[in-house]
Length: 405
View 1 (cartoon, one colour):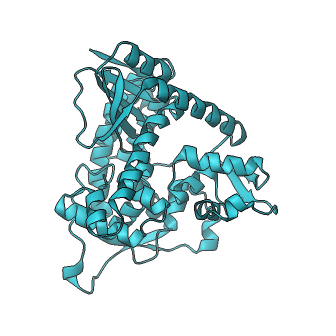
View 2 (view 1 turned 180 degrees about the vertical axis):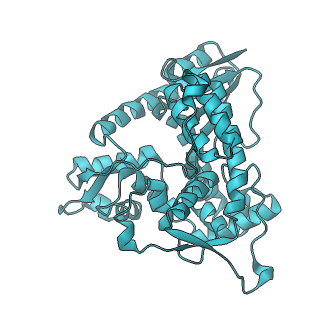
């Protein structure tokens, strides 16, 4: 038996209560804005979960908490890629972190995957009693009523925060008020505050802190209510302009509605305009979040585009800034584009940037392609001093979501 829909028409609370009351066993797959999660149920209880949200990756979590450095993460991911060992095992064996630290962060990752469902009102879900369990799962043992209690509290908090932070483009700044001891004496709090510079938007702060949207936003909201932060202004999030614009708009030829948009996207893909096709499909998915054919087309378009763009932007290339910092401030950059410019130092390879950025590998390449098209960056070949010390070759086939587990 399979049940599918979206959380607008069938809220997550109703879905979980149905799983519990019917003592269901199966897999719930959830997808929202390219982020996929899987929740495994057994006789009405939640027993395992997984998520490919870049912000919940183990490496990103450890970076956010300063448990490891970017250089250490790069080294560990190179070993992970070459050996096939899971990242946590590599980190422990190398002595970078203890097993206890890994277990703690993996548990937090699982908790965020589950309670984050209450933030995803426009997510699409599918429950399948015969669904295949993902390979990489984090074991949990949670009662649905416990999840509902904490999840609904989180849902109410998020609604309160969104009434104040009405747009991801709000710009936050420090006030002149002195920090209380609870903030000034906390290294974690000070790290988050460092990302608030009076110029960055909320979405950009989330990228720089690498944290959970809920946890970071809650911290900022608490500071705002204490008059420690203020809203300085609003900078509407720059739209993601496709790097390959459609040569002509075929909507008049393809009809209307979902089928017409899918047909248009198919024509764009046939012409090799995958970025434009993805933009069409993303807009269609927002308008019809429960359309499974659209999701399938997005997956296909992304896989084909990733293969294409990986050839144009090889993992061994080094991006160089061709635009001065003062000129960047005048440009209309998306949050992803603006964030990536902070990682471009003239030394780091594309692969290293993909590993460090809290973004999908495809999204890194899409944003870099737009910067290339606008003449803000250029690519140069890296000439390693010691060829034997170069990183192992990256097999990016199927790597749309990045190489870390």
